[in-house]
Image 1: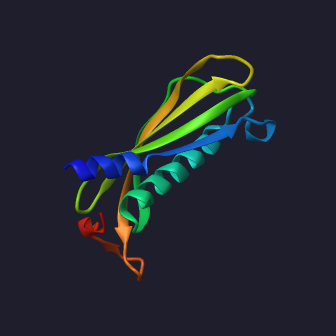
Image 2: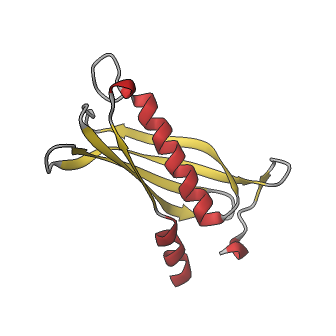
Image 3: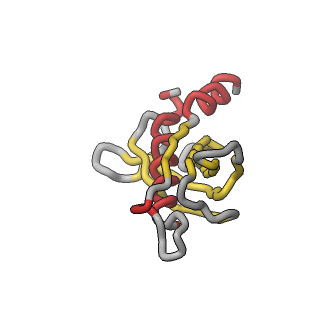
Length: 132
């Protein structure tokens, strides 16, 4: 179990983004589709780093937008393995927003991404526990 916790820690993925005008919606806040793309990318990288296998997103669950993200913000997207099974890998993704020119920082969005593994022929396969 210790090695599993270590692998979870090592596979945590953090990505930073700046909120620029080309990422805004009609309300002048970060476009939800843009941030969901960032979240899916971080979740995928986290799942791949954990398994070292070809992974794909099966479902996205419980995306919660707690706070609008304004321009002149720095966004941190954090992915971490929440649960690993023989068929499914569950990755929690949290999005934090901080002022670009100030100290404020808070969680803005979170969600759960469920992944499965693919074989060489792009067919679902069991997650190989021997790889870790």
